[in-house]
Length: 132
Ligand code: ZN
Image 1 (cartoon, protein in one colour):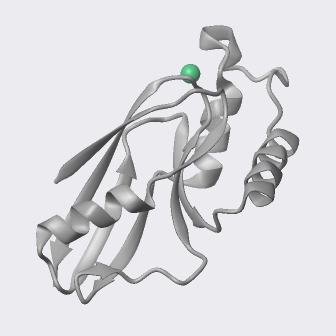
Image 2 (tube, rainbow, N blue to C red):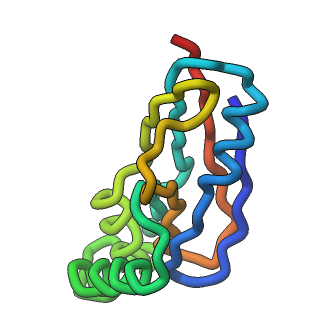
Image 3 (cartoon, rainbow, N blue to C red):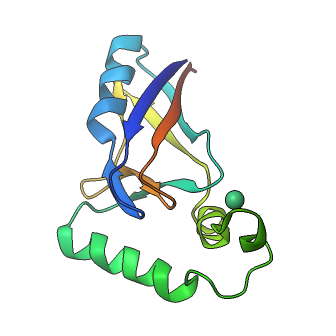
């Protein structure tokens, strides 16, 4: 199991971690299997989608629209970040990707993103490669 440490800079942002995950898969020397990418936090997510600048902004705008900050959430009484938790639930905490011929079997337009929902923070992501 490998760890990625990510320093985020914005309150909400998408960070492409595809290259780092690919390096881990290659160094594992697993030819066929699966790779699990898992965020250790309750206010972030892991998704697969296209790395296109406009789309990334559209995505963050959609999160804002669906789950705006400060809508009278009960959790805001504790630490004022209920929207971050709710967005995280919507996104999910992990993705699983097949490994074929020693590499991630991603589609042409697929990239792996860490999604910050409560930054800036230092974040930890687990990458687990399983042979099979
Ligand atoms: Zn909280």
